[in-house]
Amino acid sequence: MIGVIHVLAKRELVRFFRQPHRVVGSLAQPLIFWVLLGSGFGASFRAPTMTDVSYMEYFYPGILMMLMLFSSIFSTITLIEDRNQGLLQEVLVAPVPRIAIVLGKVSGAMSVAMLQCLVLLAAAPFLGFQPGFLGGLLLLLGLILSSLGFTALGFLIAWRMESTAGYHAVMSIFLMPMWLLSGAIFPLENLPTWLWSVMIINPATHALKLVRMPLYEEPMTLLSDSTFLVSLGVALFWAIACLWLAMKRVERADCGAPLTQGVE
Amino acid sequence: MIVVENVSHRYPGNRKTPGRTALRSVDLSLESGSFFMLTGPNGGGKSTLFKILCGIQRPSEGRIFIDGQDALASPDTIRRSIGVVFQHPALDKHLTVHENLAIHAGLYGIPKTELDARIKDSLSWTGLEERLDETVESLSGGLARQVELVKVLLHRPKILLMDEPSTGLDPGSRRAFRKTVNQIRLDMGITVLMTSHIFSEAEHADRVAIIKDGKLLANDHPDTLRASIGSEMVIISTDDMDAVEQTLAHHTEISVQRHTDHLRITGGNVVHILEDVLEKHRSRIRQLAIKRPTLEDVYVRITGRTLQETEENAQLEKTS
Image 1 (cartoon, rainbow over the protein chains, first blue to last red):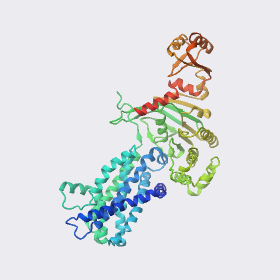
Image 2: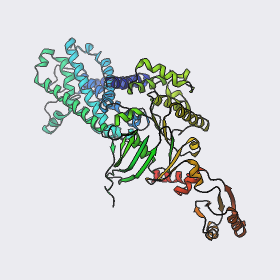
Image 3: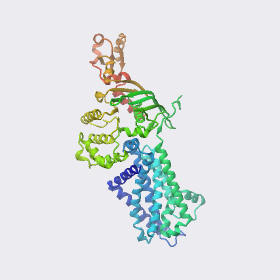
Image 4: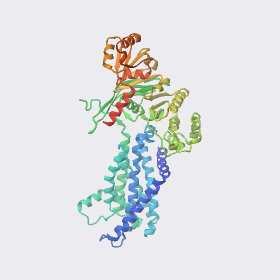
């Protein structure tokens, strides 16, 4: 089973590097976002709670999270064509456990997302972030865990989709609000209660905390900080739940309906 | 040996589309090592039966046995013994030929040390030796099909299932592909089941089955099928179909099928029919032909539609 996961994950990576425009595009987009939005908002927008943080700095974890989120979710778009007229057809008739199909795709996509995040993480020291080795490790763990959950979510939704256009439409309904309401662009403070409740159940909010907190706090304090631990727990639960549902989805072969159903 | 026992399938409906019964109590059996061709109009149940045999769809009712094993109860054992060629190539076109083959090997647990030997073994009949490191994208349709065939044979399946495998191939590649498949079947002793619209592909078939509206309408050796409509048949195109049809109605021993632009007549004494039609309608006849029935004629006789009509029908269904 490990062999199968490895084969499928490797395929994702090879495909990624074989399409240079994808490599460039996926890295340029968040950088452009960060620089333009960061400097634009930074000039005119300053929350009362953000006295000692520049907006560029505040926005940095949000951009990191966005890169992870978008890369994770949109990597599953290939499932749609792959399933009906691509390699996935053969994976489905192969004697492999169905969970290996999910894990292969998800871990491959997660690796691609992590490579992109690492490039952006290289900018961290220039902003004055010094998370240290252990802190960096915690940050990476948070990113990996969140990425697994979001890729599995994308998998779940893409599986039954007929067209990539439909997938784009559905995902933009989910994705943009999820990112906007995560605290990536504005802090989670002094908000109306309804908005605050939406933000607090949003998995992206917790993913963002997992990214932001290791940049500011010592690793040891983090591990005894209940906010961090709760976010870690939510991310873990989210990842396992989405992976499990995705597996169930694949496992359920298209079953025939009872012959009498709906017959007049 | 493959046994399909009383298989029925109904697609569940949803809000937009009502449910649809695609297979109705289909029984089939395929001898090991035989070549079986499944044909019929689109939407007739061909693809559904194919998907069920591949194990990517579970029938509403019925059972399938492959070499005595219940295919629906133990799908993994069955998956190991089948090789599937899909209508749309199941290859990653961004990857090289070798990379695609390696993925297949990985999925079927073929050790890396054995992979290259197996690839080498199976390349002899292909034009791929020099192109293992090229991406699939850069290959012609015919070569890509060869990759696919090499790929599904890597794990030495006992049964080869192919869904319209010659789609998109030019006649030359199609012939080459057909020849190769038959050679492989004889060499390796594997059972081949293929769906197709192209009747010339049935030349090596041991059995041809026609499926329409979810029912198996015919299932026999091509010669037997051809013989079933006699040794000769008549095709008449005319400006006045009604008049000619009326004349023909006097011949009770024949059967007449009316199509968009011609009448097809089987049975009876050909000379008598011709004399009668020519005597009464000579000026209205555009074309008149006597021919030995082909498999395509058997198909038209059984399904009531010519291939062209079948296709037009499919187009209509797509647009509506």
